[in-house]
Image (tube, rainbow, N blue to C red; front, side):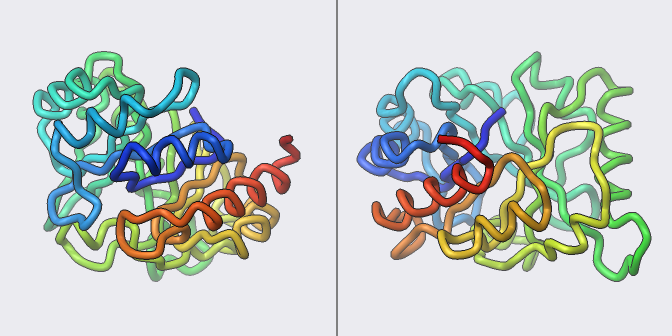
Length: 233
């Protein structure tokens, strides 16, 4: 789906800058409560600045399929990222959501389970993907993010919290390609790739001067470091 994604992009200028730096995906946030949330009109302006060949990924959490599809068509999204919880309080994205999205490629955000010791800390993610497939369609990629900091949308991502890379490396593969997010910066992304072996990375706060304001030097350094670590030019 992608190798390097710059997420939480809020302006056309930042979208063009990220693409010029070599990112092959740009994330547009539609999560209620997020400081990077866009409305449809603002998202259209950002999407219009993204050249062909760079994926436009819409990030949602607990949003009804009909509403996601409306935004996807209005903005011209290439894929949808479901970033909500597996269950419990807060915004939830059930396994059936993939099939309800009528063929739109889905990236599913997953999190390592806390307190699982050396057991399978991606067990819930595995079950979710299996149930999604049984319900009609599975995700095309899983994005491992840091644990949510609360039930509000603003705590679901872009917080700068790190994933436990060693625990992820021990957790084993999922039945779809893995991407890594959560606290990645220009200075640590190469080590994260080395430890986990992932072939895709995602950052938002790690290349910002403030929520939603991307730093061109940080974006360029992040993309360059990630591509080098993955053996890409």
